[in-house]
Image (cartoon, rainbow, N blue to C red; front, side, top):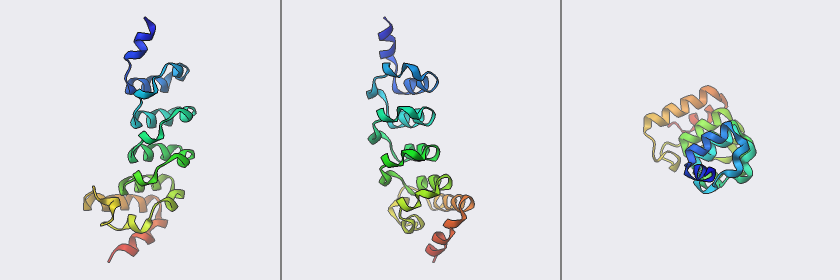
Length: 144
């Protein structure tokens, strides 16, 4: 009877439950965990990193996780981060600047910004420079 209750839980429910009750981790069906749920769980319970299926994390999941836990950087697929996610990550963790192309990040026409509007590009850069003024030189160099 008890095992059927655990089987009915979806990934979101598992993630929420394990954040508060990590001792039941051995009951988790890992296949139910998406990148979003792994990111949320690891932010609160980083001891489960050895079980994470890192490939499931997208750019936003990586951004959220690395902002709080930069120790997971060795697992990151940096190419998954868009310009928006890079700016958000660099605001908190500027040491990762060497992992992205700052020239491309400062170029509105680069692939980093393909899915963002001009307004989002400007807002993201304003926030980044406000929090990490050392990046202003990259933005200034790209403005023609």
